[in-house]
Length: 79
Image (cartoon, rainbow, N blue to C red; front, side):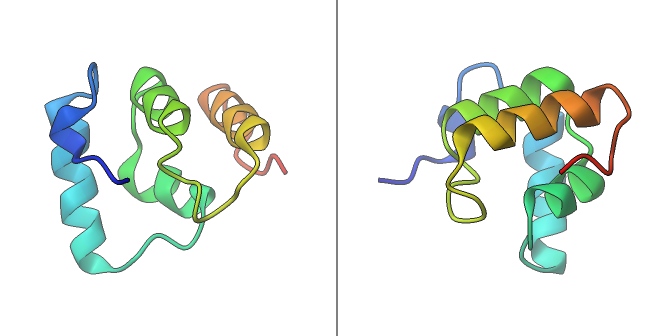
């Protein structure tokens, strides 16, 4: 089941707009690619991970959440 971005409680409209614009430029190849191109707020990124929006890129929920935390604290090369 896939849910539309507008249905995600707490996801900012600015984030939704940026996701749509960036997606038109091409698919996201990884969570890192998404974070670099969209630059979501920490809260927006956490919401997307919690609803498993990146499941097709990486099935490890915990690794995704750690990546979001690392990205938020400026450690962009976190693996």
